[in-house]
Image (cartoon, rainbow, N blue to C red):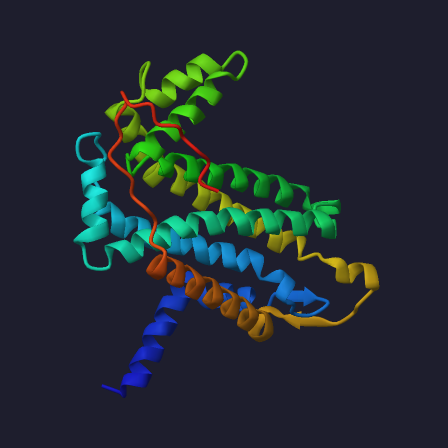
Length: 279
C-alpha cells in the first residue's frame, strides 16, 4: 500500500502530469526581480490579498443579506447584531473596500513615478487603469446595499451626477435606477452588479494584468542606477509580501473590532437627509 507520504507523492505526480501545475508554480516563484526584493514592490500582492479577503467576506455576508428595500436594512442589522462574527466580517469588508482604493492609488502613483508604464508596459498600465475603475464601481454599488439614510441619499447624488454626462447621461441614469427613481429594483440591480458582474470582470482583468506584467517583466527605479543585483520572488520578496499582507489584515481586524462600521436609520425617501462624503 505504501506510506502516506508515498501515496501523497503519487497523487501529486498524477495531478502534475495532467495539469502542469508544478511548472506554473515554479515559474511564479522563480520570477526574477531586478535590483532585488524591496518593500516598495508589495503593493500588487497586497491588492491581490485584499481582493481575496473581499471575496471571502462578501460571500459570507451574502448568506444573510436580502437585496430588497423592505428587508435589506433589517438583514444588515441582523448580521451586525445577531450573527456570530457578523459585525467583524462586515467591518473587514467595509474597511477592506477603502483599503483597496488607498493601496491601488498608491500602486498607480508608484508606477507613474517609477516610469514603469513606458516601453513595452503600456498595456499593463491601461489594464491597471481599468482595474481602478472597476474597484471604484465596487465601492459605488456596495455603498447602497445597507439601505440606510446615508447610503440611500449618497447613491442618489451619485446617480444624479452620472445622469449629467452629455449624450449618454439620461440613458445611463435610467439603466442604473431601473426606472425614474431609486427603488427596490435599483437595489437588486446594484446587488447583482456588485456580487456577480464586477467580481467576474475584476478577476479576469487581474489575470490579464498579471500575465502582461510577467511578460513585460518588473520595472523600478533600480534600472536608473544600473543595479545588476537580481533576486528571485521566492523567498525574499514572498516574505516581504506576506508580512505586508499580515500587517494589513491585523490593521483591518483591529478597525473592524474596535470601530465597527455604523449602520444608520433605515432609508426614508421622504426625509430631507443631507448626504455627506464618508471620507
